[in-house]
Length: 98
Image (cartoon, rainbow, N blue to C red):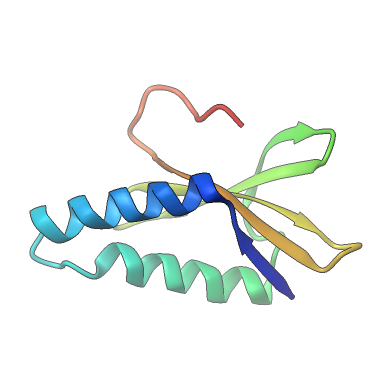
């Protein structure tokens, strides 16, 4: 399966990891959870909850439970392609603009 990470998601990952490594004792926890989510999604790409329907397909999300972030992605079975759209803090009062 092809896995892509959007530019937006890359920026968010870098920002979150920067904060996490400066402010938490478990400095690699965010990246560890992200890697675990990637492994799970490669095995079961429809694992996440459906979040919204868009012209390009269903946007799903999975929770990174220890760091309290959602990973938003789209899986295209016809292309065997998973695209990470963004990573968003679960405690925020609203979801991301997709």
